[in-house]
Length: 336
Image (tube, rainbow, N blue to C red; front, side, top):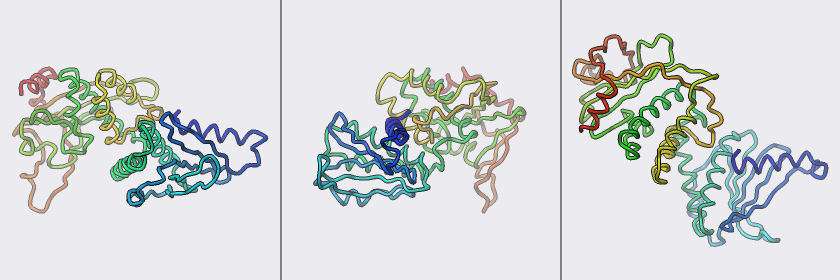
């Protein structure tokens, strides 16, 4: 359970105690190791949360004014003018009927980053960076948890990433570009690898999303297609959190771990939600193809004027002569 969630659940539990049963709002005050104070409130009437973080009295109002706005979260600067907690606070109020998971995720991240500070001096700036990061996240992703098909896709990409780490070491992390929503999932020394997957029992075709994904003219070097055939299960197989932990165990430097976690975040995977990923994947087969000039595909140069954004099915039975072994692919990549 996450830090803030644990606090809120403890407060909610207090309402069951006789001495608090008639209270509408309960709060708790906390002081972090860096002496930064925050106060947590829970309204038992409308079941909403609030987090108030103490800020420097000389805070920059212009920075706060530029914070991104959020549906469901009201941000206000308030002042406590008496008692031991006197001072200015930046309060984040969850609005009634809003998404509790979004509130929890953003505020948990704020607390995590504030814990890393030495004092109050940079609290305002750090909060702003966290809010901008999450605003960018929701500009791309609609949900906090990946859909089944998204899980299948990221699992397949992580399988190949793990293979690259075993060959190249931690620098392989920079090759993973799918998280940045580029045309191809991996770029290595000018070559590109497009990863496709299926969990269908009739694994004979893949969906190509646009006319550039299998266009060799759109790549400086060679283009390869990786096709992962999976079986999904809620009773066995490897979950995404297990695969991620295995990759983390291969990373030695703190910088590499940060890069990996940032790329997972961009992909829509939140480490804090790992317990919500129950689907297991069993790898039935992995096939690799070298996309050449005669490879069956639709590319921009083949399309009539006025036609674009083409999505189509590629039948893999017509690609057998382009099949290559994994060892051959890795060797070709390392030779560059």
